[in-house]
Image (cartoon, rainbow over all chains, first blue to last red; front, side):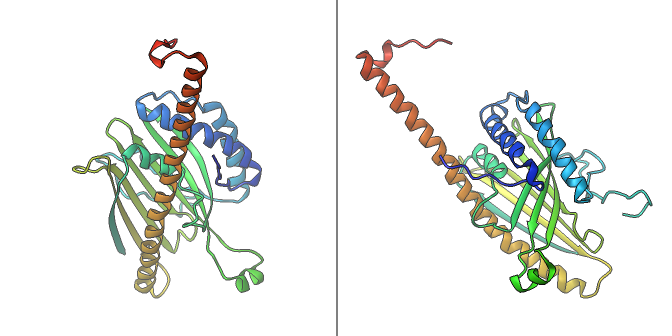
Length: 89
Length: 198
């Protein structure tokens, strides 16, 4: 079985990302889709997430956040860009 | 503003298709996507919520990248929700790069086909708005044209990934069957005589 992995935005995070992705893909297919929602990859994700957040900050990327957690609900609306500290978007 | 929509049917069950969404990249049909990162992910009331950052290269010609020093990166932020009980996957992405001038909001939903067994229907909608720069209608049309081309490539990319996933499952099943055959052959006992510990 040949596995080709996608890279991270931070090269230093690639190994952590691949370990997490492997865990997640297995858990998603074998557990989550069958109704078991206990995330087994939390500790791997935490290590990977810490690395990615540093890489995103270093590259000065301003992530867009949905203002309300409404995706998939009746109140779903077009998301607005995150406001900067000076009030502009 | 320009709106573009499309629908497509995958001849694969919903469970297989949503797995392929997470494993979509890299694939040979979409070489421009160079990075996919999970920024946040959590399960809330049995529903999986994910926030991802997608990094794409513009694909500028080498004559231009030599001058610039490198190809340019385009970033998009994607939020998604997977409900395994309702069998629904919804993704919404928005560009981060050039977000003051251009707004590209895409929404995709994956659901089991209402009448075709073991098939999945995907609906895609893109809203493109240009503001503050000239030729806005032309640019909106140009971008939705690109989205349309990428959408077709994306479907091919998904088929490629699904084939890979099914092949991996088949290989694993064959290995398991072979192991069982070897076990039966060595012991000389029929399979029904084995009891498995729970």
